[in-house]
Length: 156
Ligand code: SME
Image (cartoon, rainbow, N blue to C red; front, side):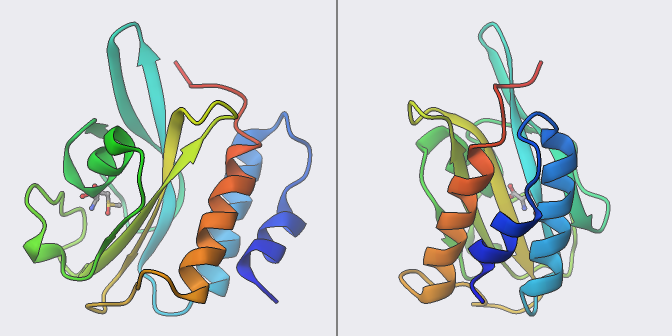
């Protein structure tokens, strides 16, 4: 079964998005092999003061605030595009929450107007764990879309 089918199956009532995000993080954590961290950073919007803050996740304790344009998550969010980093030591400005992490994929979560409302972040201790244009990445993009639909608005 595809990851997106599992995600679809765990999402319940749309209003309880923290509940849903928690179960989606756990679901992806259980289903994806060889990952060290799975979770969400959500966009806060205080006037012109946007940043990403830590949402539900599975894995080690992580940094709580990420400025737009900083780290893989902040660049993915500000450029509104999926980033696959095969070797995190080569990513300028990489934010190391876990010294054992080697590779990462970050997929933007977008509202219905295409505006970034957060990111799905997945890390692995294996270098080159994530690849562009494979079945898993396409499936993860679909998961991000399903997840985006349950986040009501930017959080403050
Ligand atoms: N490495 C990320 C920070 C978040 S942790 O991976 C959980 C980054 O560079 O944005």
